[in-house]
Amino acid sequence: MGNIAQIFRQPIWLAFIGLIVGLLIGLLFGWVVWPVSWTPGADDVAAVADSFALNGNVDLARSRLKALPKADQERILADLIKDRQSKNLPLEAERLTALRQALSLSAAPQPTGVATPAPGQTPRPATAPTPTGGGLTDLLIPILIGVFVLGLIALGGVLFVTKVLPGMRARRAAQPAPAAATPGAPAPVSAPPEAISQPSAAGGLGRFVPSYTLGNDNYDTSYSLETPRGEFLGECGMGISERIGEGKPDKVTAFDLWLFDKADVRTVTQILMSEYAFKDQNLRAKLATKGEAVQAEKGKVLRLETQSLGITAHIVELVYATNANFPPNSHFQKLIIEIVPEFKNVATAR
Image 1 (cartoon, rainbow, N blue to C red):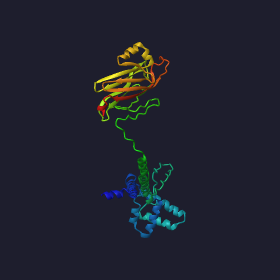
Image 2 (image 1 turned 30 degrees about the horizontal axis):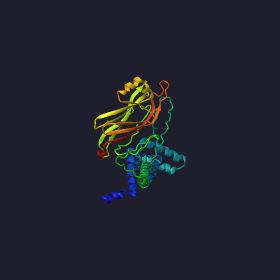
Image 3 (image 1 turned 120 degrees about the vertical axis):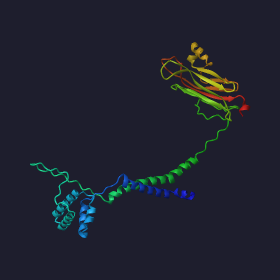
Image 4 (image 1 turned 90 degrees about the vertical axis):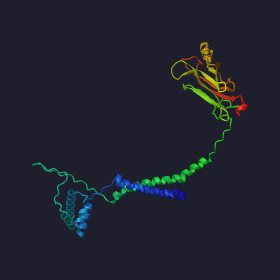
């Protein structure tokens, strides 16, 4: 069974199967979906007359013209006889006349679609319908089109399997595999140019760079702190603490910088305040209830500690928004902080 499957995976077999499927679909469209009906035309009637002149088989002639209504047979024969007589072809006219007589057809057919004229009116002859031609060629057209289209699809499949797919696999195989992460090593975070990069000391739990930009009204980010063995220790993060004014986007004047320690089930928080908020006594007193109030300044290093965890936060970038409706340095346009957490109990972390 495996050998048979391997054979049918060869490109030549794929093309052959595609051709067979295309032929079957072409037959389906030609005979079922778009069946072609053949109606004898003037040339066919003339051919039947020539055949009847040779074999005299009226039943055969009648069967060959059975798809053509009697009125059309009379009309076509009358037109053909008149045409042959005008062209001085008496023999062909006689053959057509003999066929008409054998089929018991009228010599003067009533034109299709002509109403009986009222007394005193001149009848208006109707335009004779154009004879419908047909033949084996018309029958084969849908089949050939189906076979051609399916053949193109099969050829495209063969080219993809034999040419494109191997190249894709080769390019994928040539790409270097990503380096395996070293347990306890800092997580790869894209930091801005101003961010510092420090090697992780013993007990390091990674490196995180939260970044806020004006317009991110629901800004709130957190990071899970775990040992190299995957043991959960706590979390740290930064989120919006206070806004000023109204309308969108929100004007953020202070952020929460926090550290949660699972070991002593508590969270320590520092409030990073804008220069305006820090100098406003009422606003500063309000925010001081949430945590230690700190004025945010570019380059400042902050420290938060719990029983077993600690984070060092470095303010990498600080840009105040400019808005004539608000005091200078009152809300942030951009704030980027680098956070380096560590686990104090290094022996346990290992």
